Length: 258
Image (cartoon, rainbow, N blue to C red; front, side):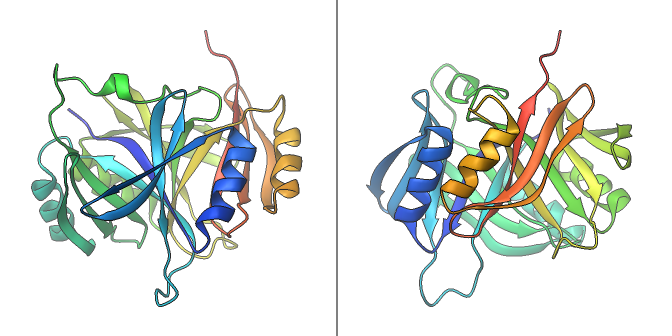
């Protein structure tokens, strides 16, 4: 069994500004919950969770960013230990999320951060019904790793996540896919010079009729356009933007398949 991306947290210095931006762009709703870990603001789409907002405190010297959660194909302890053996930096050791599961935060050997995750077993043994299907308007629909070492990254994620690799022709040359049990789970590409550092980028399916219209909405809500729109023939039209608090992410209008 392979890993898969299942959750996305936005770290933001201004929670209310982030709420206004994403509810305006994607039509998400926000549920605020309190637990042993404190207050958590959860993104919802069609009644299902997508991720949440983690506030950045004034004493925290970190930029706004999205963090992708990679569900472990085995135990999270094994995943984190194997990652560390392969040169990853454990930024947050494995910690319990009461009633949910366990998580950690690590940076891969090239420096891209992500969150290993292990959920508690669900009644019936299947948690797929709790996830929004990729391609749904407003949903996370693709994960892309920008890295300084494509071959090294592929080897690393194959070892910890059970992925297999394949390649396809991309807009800027060969594009590498990480494939899971249900098909392609993520893409890996060489970091362009203008990108500040290796990172995972999450792409969300737009709710507007076109990427151009979505970009206008981004700008009207206080965000900025970094790249695009760009056509990926037969796959999608994409763009990369920053939200109103400065966190970068991708927009995608998928080409209907089949």
